Length: 192
Image 1 (cartoon, rainbow, N blue to C red):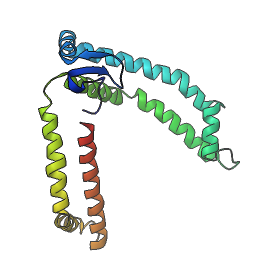
Image 2 (image 1 turned 135 degrees about the vertical axis):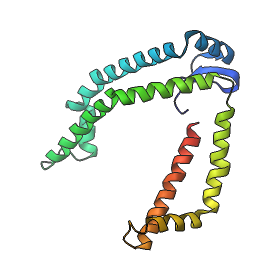
Image 3 (image 1 turned 30 degrees about the vertical axis):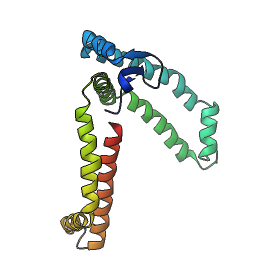
């Protein structure tokens, strides 16, 4: 899990990015006592407070003529007289950011990831995480590197019809697809 409220190196749990220090066994006992549902409610409430605070303090600054908006105007040259479409895009992105943060799906995924990651971090059982990391780093990525040309040719052959017979285009798309798969695997491994 990439998201967690605590980090527990060497059996001592710290709040994310430092702070408190608690023995892993004590943290595990407290989490078991409170239960998953309590952790989810706590995370949900903190998320809601955070989004409300962001919306009430940061969003008005981005819409107003404060330093944040002046910085956007300067960095992206939005003060030019022909930049009304640009300013429309900026306002749309600001509003979409707020909508994203308020989205029930984002809210749910954040809580799920945070609680699962926190419970996993407090447990002593990291074998599954180690197994996944080993399989990705030492087996799958190595296998992809070793079999790269064969994989590219087979994938390009599958794409040939969609590429209207252009093998070069199909091969390029296969290479981009393989790069994306390697990035996804690497990102997943690093998030563990």
